[in-house]
Amino acid sequence: MFYEFGKIQNPFHWMGDASVPAFLQFLVVLSEFAGGLVWMIGVVVPLASFGIFYTMAIAVFMHVGLRGDPFVSQG
Image 1 (tube, rainbow, N blue to C red):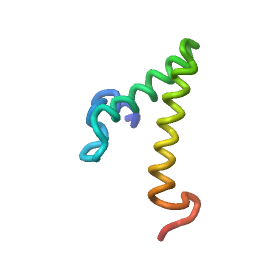
Image 2: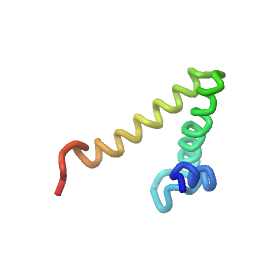
Image 3: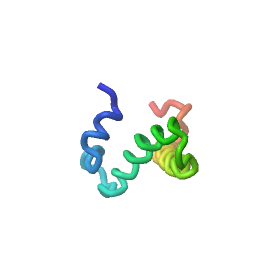
């Protein structure tokens, strides 16, 4: 099944036992799902873009900033 569908089904606890608060998990689901719909419809695009930008910026930081260079094998 699609990964995003699990987020929509359980928007407050989709990260499992992560230390991220439920409210922030919900904001990620909202910006990814509703942001894409808003882009397609063309309503409040700047607000949707703001949410998607910061969601992806945090994702890049969590992946690259905490794990190192994504293009170099660690093993």
